[in-house]
Image (cartoon, rainbow, N blue to C red; front, side, top):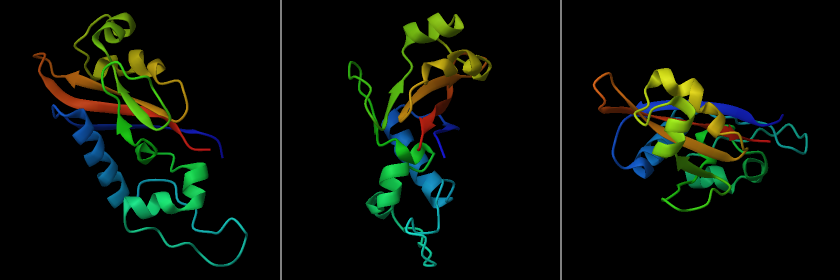
Length: 146
């Protein structure tokens, strides 16, 4: 199947990790992720969608192929941490300025910062501001899945 790009906008909250957790739960609850209902061994037995995120990640096929969604991201990186599989890294002010010419990003700057998430199984997020410069929403984007 190959990797899939994904993107989400959520209302701003100061705790980016909590925003990631809430987004993941929302996507899971809406069943807005890739789920192959058939077993890999080509049997006629359909796989039932899991009822919790923990159950989702117990599924061997999900572990190998991912969900092609934010569900493949497990943790928000802290400042100074190196990006790793399944992590989301916030856009830093210097990156924002280099890519978009401002450190107060808005929705109009999204296209300029999208190249910051070029690696598979790794996500980015950026705080987006309103016309008055106040934080308004958080943009999450990346690529995952096999």
